[in-house]
Image (cartoon, rainbow, N blue to C red; front, side):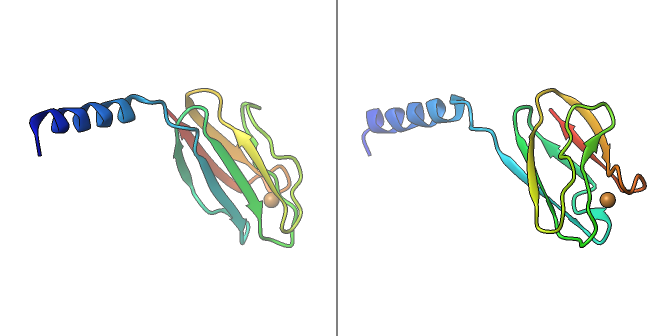
Length: 105
Ligand SMILES: [Cu+2]
């Protein structure tokens, strides 16, 4: 392969890596009275979709109020956007012993 082709490929790769990636969506299932991912790592701007698989209603509510799914009945899901960096502890308002964390960088 000619050197200029290799350089062109390398340049394209660098441009590709430098392009901002689209926000990712992360899934957290709520099952058996617990959140499926105890400590979820996300990037700022990512979304997290919570799905309730229990018969009991649940919420995913940030302790600092930064997000709240509201009441989710069985089979329902809600998506929240993580808009800032930090560690976000959250819980279920119906079952406050249900706790988990999202770490956003
Ligand atoms: Cu709950």
